[in-house]
Amino acid sequence: MFTVGLTGGIGSGKSTVAECFAAHGVPVIDTDVVARELTAPGGAALAAIHAAFGETVMQADGTLDRAALRRRVFSDAAARHRLEAILHPRIRQIVAQTLATLTAPYALIVIPLLVETGGYRDVLSRVLVVDCPEDLQIARVMARSGLAQDEVEAILAVQAGRVERLAAADDVILNTASPAALRSQVATLHRRYLALSTAASS
Ligand code: ADP
Image (cartoon, rainbow, N blue to C red; front, side, top):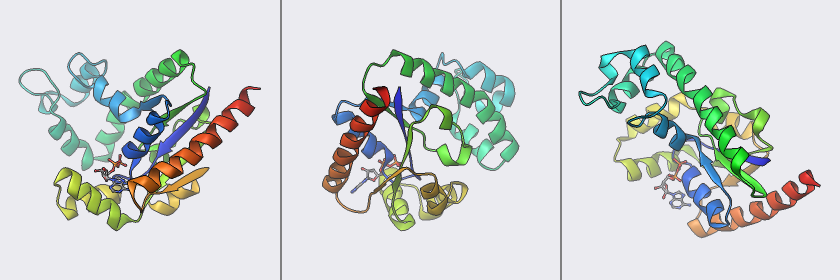
């Protein structure tokens, strides 16, 4: 199936762009949502995370203590890699299973850390990067989450920079203007992806 991988830094506008594609009827698979489902009560990754990290990342009721896990992996690269080794293969498997059920001309897969992890290239027909200056990312995330500026800057610091991300892009959406401007860029890309997916399947 023809697939477009959507990536971008935190607050760049990935979710907003994905909503615009969904409004055109494009199926959207968000790997962050898949990750949350895998770690929700009854989720398929919960037991492995409990076994790898112990009681300190679990709450008394047996659900995941997300804040504790986030603190644990944020400051410890080895722990982060251990968590990724648990989650990434399971996410990939669910993405592949979901793609196999779709009949649309193409699908959008939201992969926030596409550039950082280097995965998924084999299942992606194209990479779409949503880009904006870092000061705008910071302002948007502060407004959305209530995090302080230095907390947002710390997240940006562990993500790929704009230049590195843009180097991986087949297509770019510059999200510096209004939501209407964003919708118009998505409409243009949607037409292009329909044409490309039709050409690829004929
Ligand atoms: P990401 O998914 O990349 O973290 P979001 O799509 O959630 O980013 O966007 C971050 C915040 O900025 C959200 O609150 C969103 O509504 C807002 N936003 C995104 N694009 C625009 C835009 N062009 N104009 C105004 N606000 C925007």
